[in-house]
Image 1 (cartoon, helix red, strand yellow):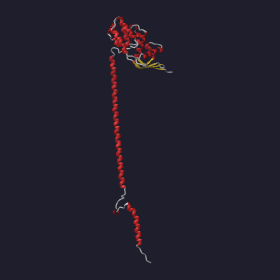
Image 2 (tube, helix red, strand yellow):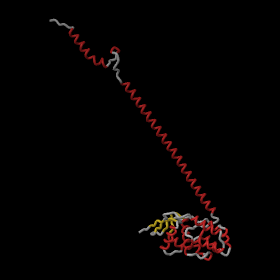
Image 3 (spheres, rainbow, N blue to C red):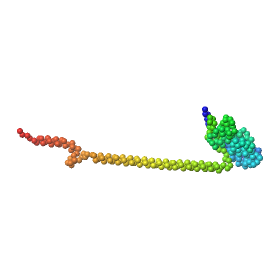
Image 4 (cartoon, rainbow, N blue to C red):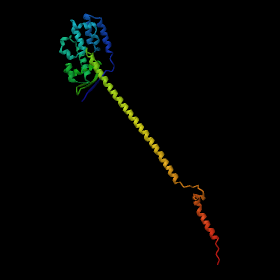
Amino acid sequence: MTQDMLLDNEEPAKSKETFLEKFCVLAKNATGAALLDVLKQVLEAPNVFVFGELLVEPNVAELKDGPDAKYYNTLNLFAYGTYKEYRSKAGDYIELSPAMQKKLQHLTIVSLAIKTKSIPYALLQQELEIDNVRHLEDIIIEAIYADIIHGKLFQNTRILEVEYAQGRDIPPGNTGKIVETLQAWVNSCDGVSSCIENQIKYANAEKSKRLFNKDRVEQDLINLKKMLKSQASDSDESMQIDTHGPSGSGVLSLADLRKKPSKMKAQRNAGVVGLKFSK
């Protein structure tokens, strides 16, 4: 039986940038062991998942070529790297506490979620070096409650479907690639917009053409009706009998036709009366 889990936060988390700003202020005024302690705190802080601003702080940047370079490398790893990178070169970094390791695993999930929205459990287990599926799901749920990803766990197919993933810091030198990607996206949007405008123009032209044809047909029908009505009127006039003409005009009126039989009868009677027979 399929068991799907929809995971999301009910309330939005506080601004992560606000938490980072506090550590930036602390790092700006700290040196030596105090600075290293600030870096440990930020690496364990549950609400900080971006570190770019802290990396460019002068006090922190100076650690890169000094005896405490491992702290700078570790901060750089959390900004751009993954848990698998840490495991492959653990000697380049400070020893991570359990909280740091879990946080780096969460960031690794974010990196995978940025690349693809459907992540197999097998890939997650490989990248996070986790053998137990239940442990893996716990890590994913923790990342979701940290509000850095939103998604569904499909336990029957063992896939994480990502609906949202927080962005990570941009590595130096990758800005140009991002600009190219955004420009390609803008060009694509322009092409789609132009295509839509052409379709709108074509649709409007077709609509105007149909309306013109409709008006022409309606006018033709009106003209045809007028013509048929006129022809019918002319035909009626040609077939009409004159019922008002004078009786001496040589045209028999309807009144004459009605009176004629009675007149003829009277004339016959008058002729009979005028005859006299003798024996």
